[in-house]
Image (cartoon, rainbow, N blue to C red; front, side, top):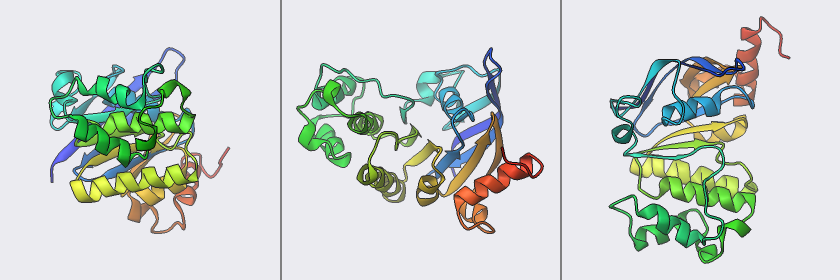
Amino acid sequence: MEHVLEIRNLKKLYKNGRGVEEVNLTVDRGDVVGLLGPNGSGKTTTMRVVTGLSVPNSGTVKIFGTEIQEDHEKAMEKVGCLIEMPALYGNLTAWQNLKMAARYYDNVDNDRIRYILTLVHLDRYRNDKAGRFSLGMKQRLGLALALLSDPELVILDEPANGLDIEGIIQVREIITKLAAERGVTFLVSSHIASELEKTCNKVAVLHEGQMLTFEPMEKALEFQPTLEDYFLFVVREKRGGVVL
């Protein structure tokens, strides 16, 4: 099986001592891998290093066999990502934002833009300016930008942020549909265990800057009723029986 993403002994610490270390995981084609942890656990830092937005202190990241720090352009050519808040032009419409992004890709035409807007349920708002969008609608447009180029690996940092119940379900369905039908690989972060449980086939637990576990979802739930219970169990074991 092809390894889409390989992270080995990753360490990234900032001057304030926060960050992440000892991250090791392998993501295969069609996997939906969840990074589970509270705010400040290192999820976004990990994703920033994976996409080349931050330089690690040590360790390696390979995407489709290419080391991200050695050839960033080649490593990212089949990757779409949404990390932190989406970068949108508030004075442009949803359509115009995607049209601007389409200039960087050879395979994106108007039909692709229409398809993506429909996929993320923004087609009816295509001519509305992004600056007037709610947080949830901006998140949908950010997801549209991440999927625009038909990437083989999609990296999503808290994709449910700002979405209502219906929106969360729709994003979940998009992820599972593309993974199952197209073999698209996803790396998704969240602090909401129940969402990752319904979406992912593998899960990594991050806590206070360390990756505590990485295993198939079915193994994580083998002796725990929910992923939330599994998370608490793993953290309790790490703390010697104490969860603060």
